[in-house]
Each structure stands twice: as structure tokens, then as C-alpha cells.
Length: 312
Image (cartoon, rainbow, N blue to C red; front, side):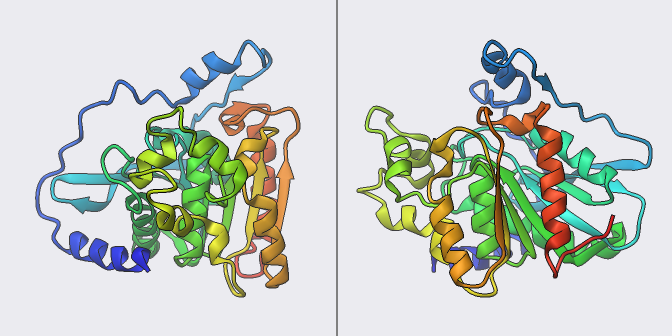
């Protein structure tokens, strides 16, 4: 499939790293971050607070590590590391409709995971304005490979790596996980089926030219239907795939394909579970009081996965 051919090309690109890194210019339209989201939500949820990312004692941050390079374009990650040996790893993928967002979005969750003994890694990836699908999937899979390659240096367990993400990052994490090599997946309010009626209602909205998904795929569903199907994690359900925990908001839009995928996973004998946080907006994981139950559910699920379990 296209994803696997693209992975081969990614390896070839990575082997050709030579040029100095040049950061792309800042995009003033990229405003998917905690502060802008808070400004939109605070009126309806006046009790929320932006979750902090201060490093607690015993947790160190290893920042700005280049995990893959295309010419002068370097993609980077940050690691949040507790003291320990052969620590399990959670790689965190930010959201933003495939076209915006920053890896710092998941710094608060990374800190809280590290406080509980998990190495947490936040990654940047190519957004749709820079490179269309499947670039983001390639990038996240490259980040997982980088983690494995550097496991000894940072005392990580290469056999216990989970992918987690929110919104578009939840879909990316799911797809990168079911077509890659990880032991568990946490999908936080990310789509599971782009071709479902619910997804098409929003992601293929003719009033949006293009929609966020349309921009990522390079065309509407009628024009690029094969890509819309290929990018749907539901189409990769099979025995032996990684277990998935779905954590959802109270916004039905982002549940597209979730229950159908869970049913298929159960039929295939694959572990899956879900937690729906009541009365929550999309992007709830950026804020207290919702971040902690998200972290707790993530850890409880990972502990229950036989190939991942990490006693606290």
C-alpha cells in the first residue's frame, strides 16, 4: 500500500541527511494552542485552567532532538524523562486539523506521565500546508524508530512504546500505530473512519474549500476517495494489532467510526476500551480539570496491556 512505499522513501531521505537545519518561517495562521483555545472556551467553561508543564523534581527535559531530516528541514521532538531503567515510552502527537498545532500542546500530559514513571516524547510533524498525507504518518513512524534507536542512550524500553494523540493527532497516532510497530495506542478524540456519514458531514463540508481533511488529502472525498479510505484506522483492524484506548469528549463529531472500530476489534480478539468525559469540549486534554483523568485512564489502560504493562 501507499503507506509502505512511502516508508521506504522516508528511509532513503533519512540516509541523505547533510544540510544544516533551517526552521520554517512562523505561520501567523497557526493558532491551535492552549491559550487561543482557552480564549474560545472560557466563556462556556469558566472553571477551566490551562494545564501547566512545569518540570517536577526528578523529571528532566531533553529538548529539540532532530529525529528525521529532509534536506534542510529538520523535524524535532522533546523528551520528558524520569529517573529509571528501561522505561516504557509514550509518544505524543499534537492535534490541529492536520494543518496547525505545536508539539508543546502535549507538554503538560508528558510531564504528568513522566511523574508516573513513563518516558514521554512530544513530536512535531509536517502539517498539510507543507506536505500532504501520508507525510505526517511517515514522520510519526520515524519518531518511533528514532526512540528505538536511542533507547540505550536514554534508558528506554524499545519493546514498550505506545502512541497517543489528540484530535488530528489521535487519528495520526492510530493510523501510524496500526500500520507500524507499537505496543498500544491512545486515541484522544480522533477520527477512526473518514468515510463514515458523520465524518463526511464535517470533513467533506462543501461550504469549506477546502476542509481540513480535504487540504490534507489534496481533494474532496469524491476526488480522493481511495486516500480517505486508506487513512481510516478502522480499515486496519486485525488480530494481533495494538490495543487501543479511546478517550472522547462530549462532542459527537469526533467519535466518527469509533464504536464500529471497537466492535471490529472485539470480534478480532483485540483489547479495546473507551472513556467518554461528560460535558467536555473538544481539546479538553489541554485543560484542568480534564487532563488528569486523561492521564489516569491512559496509565490504567497501559498497565492492563500484557505486552506493555508497567507497574507503578
